[in-house]
View 1 (cartoon, helix red, strand yellow):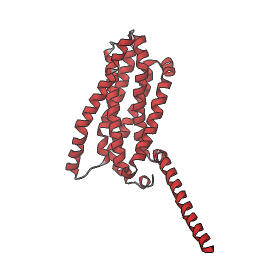
View 2 (view 1 turned 180 degrees about the horizontal axis):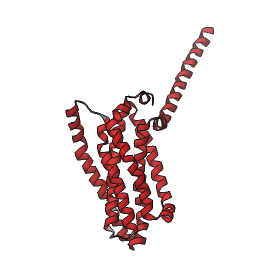
View 3 (view 1 turned 90 degrees about the vertical axis):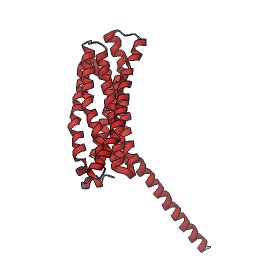
View 4 (view 1 turned 180 degrees about the vertical axis):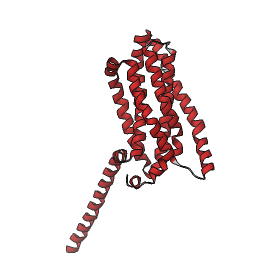
Length: 250
């Protein structure tokens, strides 16, 4: 009887330890994206900029109808056609990324006898330059009632920038963290979802206070601030990755 109780207690202890280990592993997996997001400067910067681009794209998407109806007196049927500008910009960005990204990676690998995650950031740097240009063009030409095709070109540039930002982001972060690539991508998706939801809600009050031109200019100035930061990561990101703090981020 005593031996039976001893065996039962041992099996119960093993089961309890296994259950606690499983619970700890589940909690760790669920919280890892947040921990990486706020402990890793690289992940936070890349994810924040990607979320900013994503949120601005949705801000334009949700306010375009009101802008063209008030400033250009378009009817509902004509407004639908204007969304093609954003779609064309995204398609051009997708084609450009597909043509350039892999070729550039192969070129750098052959030239340096190795491949680095930072090579993925080239298209993002170009996209970061294009984003403020598109915002300035869209905001001020729409406010001054310039011919409707001009702000639509600005919207196309914003869509072009968004694709050149989002596509390399996931590839870069997965190359960076490999084993925990899914957690890093999840961290970026959390910020994108937040920005995509909040930006359209903040747009009407900003439009009424600042006007269409200055509102887009504010976001454009913020986007300009990321250009040197992304260029720095592309150029010196390897040095940051070799630092002790990077190794302790997980």
